[in-house]
Length: 318
Image (tube, rainbow, N blue to C red; front, side, top):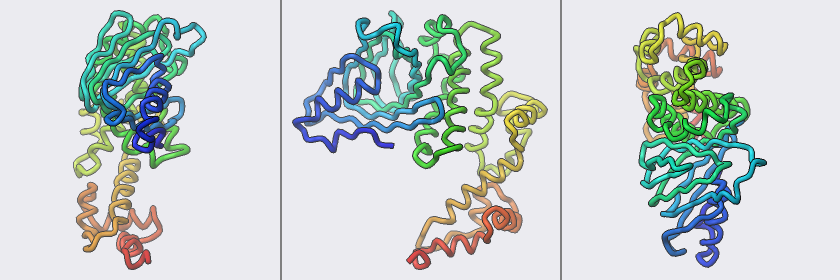
């Protein structure tokens, strides 16, 4: 949901409004814009997903700081794992520097001092309370500066980009599930650079299901998507894959079909001047047999694909 948009604020009030909004979102003490009010801009969107908060921010060039004076032992430790989309700069905490860049991943303990200086930037951040990570605080400090080099960093980046696209369209159980997946991946990401072998092993096991689900969603249109391909892509055996799914109470093949049907259902609802071919939609979402697609579609939605498509034609809507 939209939290703040500087375009809606009069120019005379914009500077103070932007400073107040970004320092509050980043747990910072100070924010110094590098442009005048007429070119200063900030757009903030935020979503609560279970125990995690995801914040998407687009902002003009600035520097933000959290001072040692502001930090206190009473603050609940929150780790912010940030994924870059646009912009460059430097992030510094406890004499450790991280590079801010597109596709980069860096982390901050929001209860401790830090400095962050960037050009015009666009980032998506997961804010996670340390108490939900199950990782001792003494292991987290050194791990934060190494997080961008983790082999799991690209996967976490991809996950947050997907969250940003879908978060406004889900609520209830779906939002809680996204939060659970985000927490599991955040824990695995931090554990992978913690130098604790047992913690890393446990965290990687916990992250298996989110990794598998992310891979499946990205390859739903592939008609050859099956247990063998999924297991190989995620560096596990087929037996391990099915055990992982069983722990999550998920029937793999049925879940894949359900996801494909939901995508086809959404596409067929699009009102276009020329109706798309049912067979083309079926094939696009991994169904080799249009008749099989139609049977599964009717079983799930109570009507045929053609009836659903007709129901969503512009003239039918009127």
